[in-house]
Amino acid sequence: DTEVTQTPKHLVMGMTNKKSLKCEQHMGHRAMYWYKQKAKKPPELMFVYSYEKLSINESVPSRFSPECPNSSLLNLHLHALQPEDSALYLCASSQEGQVETQYFGPGTRLLVL
Amino acid sequence: AQKITQTQPGMFVQEKEAVTLDCTYDTSDPSYGLFWYKQPSSGEMIFLIYQGSYDQQNATEGRYSLNFQKARKSANLVISASQLGDSAMYFCAMRGSTDSWGKLQFGAGTQVVVTP
Image 1 (cartoon, rainbow over the protein chains, first blue to last red):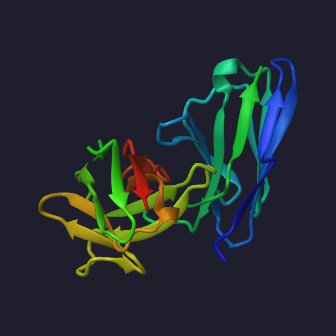
Image 2: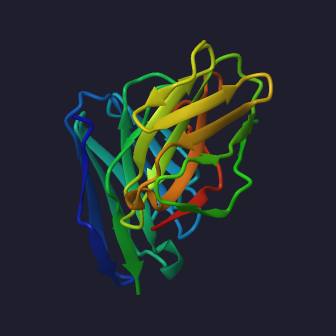
């Protein structure tokens, strides 16, 4: 089973709102990732968690706050976003290891008004 | 630094025909992995096929095969017997053994449209 789930599928929020994106995997993977993808572009890495600890933050603005409550769950807390943050947010997971395959979820389409 | 190049922004292919999507890469890592992903308009990034830099054989997965030419630093994806459901964006990606841990470098993508 190579399933990664993400909720919600779509999210519309105002610039003063606080919302969270959720990601879950049950493949026993110990690495989880958040990516941001704009239309017609490849995904851009935002954060990497390894064994529930943040190992990479790609200089993401603090209005995005990741959290890894346990090895199966990954959250992305959103606060005071800007319209340019509107994008598809993809979660992925993999076994630990630098050339391991990353498996992606279906994504959350975020629109910031 | 690593770089992935996909030179075909888009292509049309007729149903039942084979199509080759080009991917070249540049890395100084001795060990690396090459991946192809498919992204339909729904947004999900679907893993298709993997080739390790030390693998002697070209990878195959069903109708997908990877034409790996290490000396030329190319990793082209071949889709045989195209189906309408193959219409999607296809991304080539690479992870190196000495690069920042977890970083998957993507190419710009190739949009494939399969016509009846």
